[in-house]
Each structure stands twice: as C-alpha cells, then as structure tokens.
Image (tube, rainbow, N blue to C red):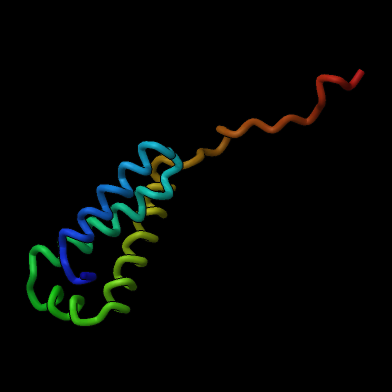
Amino acid sequence: MWAVWWAWGAAAVLLAVGEVLLPSFVLLGFAIGAAVVALVLLVGGPLAVWLAASLPMLLLIFAVVSLLSWLALRRWVGVYRGQVKNFDHDINDG
C-alpha cells in the first residue's frame, strides 16, 4: 500500500484540504512532500522501483521533501520583520 502512487496522491489532497481549513503553512509542506512522492511513484523509473522496495527510504524522501518545502514556504510567505507588533506599555498603566 505504501508503494501505490494514488495513496500518496490522496494523502496530498487531504493534507492540502486540511491546510485550507487550518491556514498555518504546516500541512502544506507535508502535502507537497506527499505529492512529490506520488509523482515519483507515478512516473516510475529506477528511482521509483528503489523507493517502492524500501518503506524507510520512501518515508525519508517524504520527510526531506516536506521539510525543504516547509522551509521554502516559511521563507516565501512567512512572518516578515516588523510584521509582529510588540507592546512595551500597558493601557492600564497610569
């Protein structure tokens, strides 16, 4: 089941829908990782055969791609300097 491309594609779609419901740019990185794994398994070739034979390698590729995509998203659409306001005083201070 882990080596089936449509399972990874379905996981990518579910994670993307979860990102729409919970906008935090966390699930989108996992969705991109699952989509990349699904695409590699769909296209085939020697890499797909090698990945399909080893579940730990498949999960490692998923984790690495997810982390890299999350870091790229964080850099691209993350919190910018000056976007967060810090308050130095309280309104109740006299």
